[in-house]
Amino acid sequence: MKKIFLIWLVIFLIGQAVVATTNDVPIYTFIIKLESSDPGDKLQAAEIKWLKDTDEQIALVNAGYGEFYVEIYNDPTVWQMVNYLKKQSGTAILDSNQMNLTLDAALNLARYQNTVRLFRDKGLKRLAFRYIPDRGPESMIRVYYVHYEKGGVSNGKDTVYTSTTQFLVAKCLEHEEPAQWDLGCGLEWTAVSDGRPIFVPALSLTRSKSYSELSLTGGYFPTGENDFKFFAGSAAYFPRGNNFGLLARIIYASEAVETYGAYVQQGFGPTAGIVWRQQALSLYLTGGLQYFDRQRQDRRAEATINAGLNFKAITF
Image (cartoon, rainbow, N blue to C red):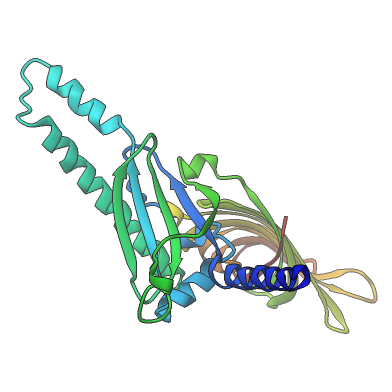
């Protein structure tokens, strides 16, 4: 009997383990902390460090196997403002509770809409959200995924079994976001009037933030007869964290004879233009002047144009 009991106990425990593996899938909670009055409209999907399971969860929601719960919390700052106005002479607040609710509702809805926008930009096509406004000790957006069997709720439940919380702090994003260093590779092309175009593969070291980038770029290409060389220091600014930005560069470009080590043409100078970036890829086009010398003639200012692309291969 003891052996039979032990066998049944083992079978029962194995069965429970299988059930836990099937249903008790860890759910990750995604939290955005905000200032009291911030609706989250400046947040961009490309700037967010998404949780590791976000793409998988979005695919499941698109396929009809779940939805996202969006909990919006306001801190007591709005209520304090209403109470302060209520005490001021010459200020009439007929219903402070109603005013609190009105202000909360407007801010909650704006935060909810921005959350939907972020997930749509991330790839969500089926807008399956459950909107849960509330008040709490701090201002934030809390999002988590709930898994369903297609066509209904898994096992008749809609609760999260286990939860591991990870944070994205969006408060004062432009000031508090740490810089990111990237090592990239790409191509550089430069042409100057009265000169031969320079085209080289290049490596770059970039310090990136949501609104700005600083980079150093160097390239070299031996053609068999001559050597092409290129160097640049660059500064870019992206208004409101947009994909398009403004770019300023100081460039150097030269063509040298391999055999003798003497240059055929050489120039350096400032350029300015536009840049577009999407995640790891950047494309840019600038124009300006080079202080240019061809075949050791007198140096003079010549118009120049520079274009290139860069792919950030390594982040550290």
